Image 1 (cartoon, rainbow, N blue to C red):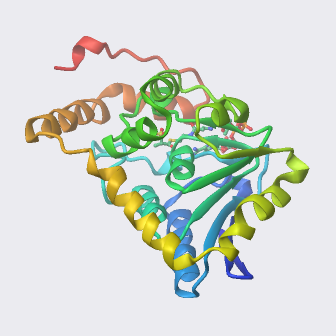
Image 2 (image 1 turned 90 degrees about the horizontal axis):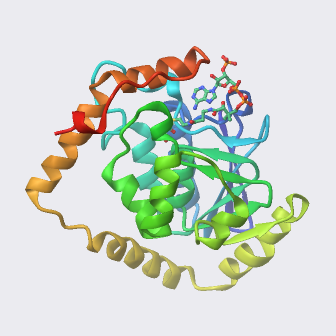
Length: 265
Ligand code: YXS
């Protein structure tokens, strides 16, 4: 098992325990996390905490790069395991809190943003890194970042693919609270979980369900723009830079990208 769930006083503590593989969001990890979410809801928890055993200071290295397809198919299509996990977190009718102690990369950053709240240690960092490996992110993921951080910070994170500190993340509203590493658990309990146990889970659930509908309410785009987005993405994940991004990472060498912005029609 890559995930361990412990239910204590109506809170499900879901811990990623694949530190040897940097808690990569492999198909197996995503599946087990989704099952843990379902178990928490079925057992009438009032909240879920997603946490991780860390190795090398990494909370999660994001999507498992070995599982990114190189056959021209969309690496982030609607039904890939990681995307299903992100929607499962967003749609779970009870609050999900990411408790971060370490560095967060790529799809794991989107996982944190899909949670309802994030508490992190001061030494945590957050990075969204498709540009680093030549991958075209997807519209729902980009929208997450725009909605949560605003255009400017979202562009900075996507274009630079550099980690931002917990302090910076707090300032832009990516995370809710920052604590000293040895006070993180107490901060989680005192600031987040105690009120969740006290408050009406029926009311919270109705409010969370409304949040999700309203957060998606504004994104009606024309069929032409929908097709334009798909065309941009297909030209990238079907191209050479994407393959070079993955191969260079696995071969532990700097990528040599040849694609030009003008290649995109
Ligand atoms: O050489 P070995 O076999 O020991 O394997 C190395 C790395 O290849 C492996 N590893 C990964 N394998 C699959 N998927 C990953 N995401 C991944 N990350 C790392 O773990 C072993 C140790 O890695 P190493 O030597 O680099 O460790 P480190 O301590 O020097 O550095 C740790 C990291 C996390 C800073 C470094 O591994 C790194 O930058 N990893 C990639 C982080 C990243 O860009 N993740 C995004 C994955 S793609 C994704 O999430 C989305 C699709 S998107 O791209 O759109 O954001």
